[in-house]
Picture 1: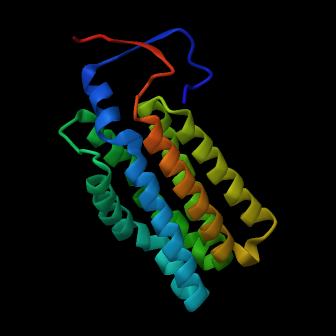
Picture 2 (picture 1 turned 120 degrees about the vertical axis):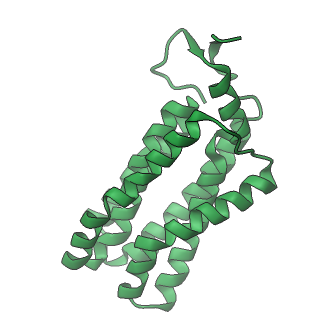
Length: 196
């Protein structure tokens, strides 16, 4: 879907266009995020907040790359050599750089951990708006911000189930929408490949 604030013709390299096509707009990562949130709800239902908070903090390190790779293979997405791969890695490093803050929040109030993780996730999605020229990533980031805010300020005591459940549903829906939007990537744009 076209970003409403981009007017006129856009110029991009063939490498970027190929990256958008090959990665199916990053849909496998969004689907993997949905799987992470589903497991977060399950872990929260069967364990204590202390254990569930550890899953929330560290589970994504393992779950998202593994599940994302599997979904990429199933969906036909390809991870080919591209300078944009490095940008994706840097973007995902946001979590690592914020681990000290997450540990401080965990020591202050366990109820804030799910919302904190969802908020960091929402922030890291913003760069994908630019990489893929995709409004759906912006909407997903804004929904992550809204979900986090609701469970920080209104319902912190049920955040372990609420944030995970709502985020799982949102990620699975948006994973599908992003995937479908790349059947014809950038079709809503007037674009020109500048290095042909």
